[in-house]
Length: 266
Image 1: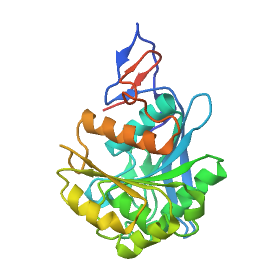
Image 2 (image 1 turned 30 degrees about the vertical axis):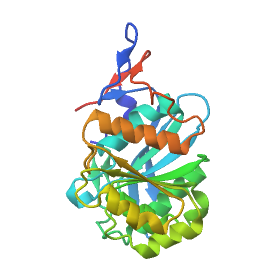
Image 3 (image 1 turned 180 degrees about the horizontal axis):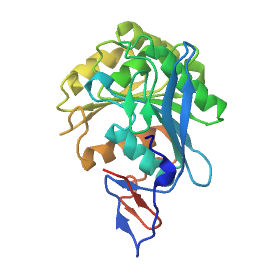
Image 4 (image 1 turned 45 degrees about the vertical axis):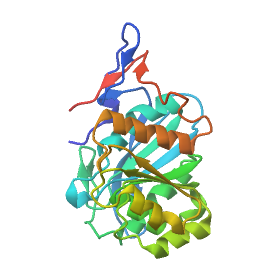
């Protein structure tokens, strides 16, 4: 059965409560479908601020589906739970071709990042057609490869402001793609865990030196999957700082919430 985001049950508390991994803050959430130019249907979810303007739009590209990556990978799930309410940021999550999650299964099969070009284009086109402003690609692991390979070339390049990369392995993405980003001049923020399994901060600085505008941020103590609330929160703060004018604030995004909230199923 497909998960319906309208099924969250919101309740008010007596005063502020901590925002935990499963805390869902108010937003306008809907299940969506994306259509690719090569005939696939991708399932996803769009979370919008409940009221007020959309300050930025995140188009999220998930980790490797053959190793457990999907639209519900925890950083993206927490982004959709929190950022519409805390930062006025819209979050579009979707399963690339052949990927399954509680939302459902996207048609097709894994294509090693080649056919997934159409998935990236479909997601960006959806955001444009919905009138979502200030659009940014956010890639994590395999998703960074898609952002690097397809984000700085048309038809995507002219429709996005830039990209934020989490744990880039730089396996499929090559110097050619880095040079395309350099030529585009678009901002590129690269968050690299100190203990990443594939690319650690010192090497990332060297590799991304091909992109003069790239900002490489090494995160002490973090690992490839950003496990732990401390590291997930750091990622969300960095994203909001990059994509919104107001940023996350001197102390980062709030860690408590005083208002209606729900608890996501485990």
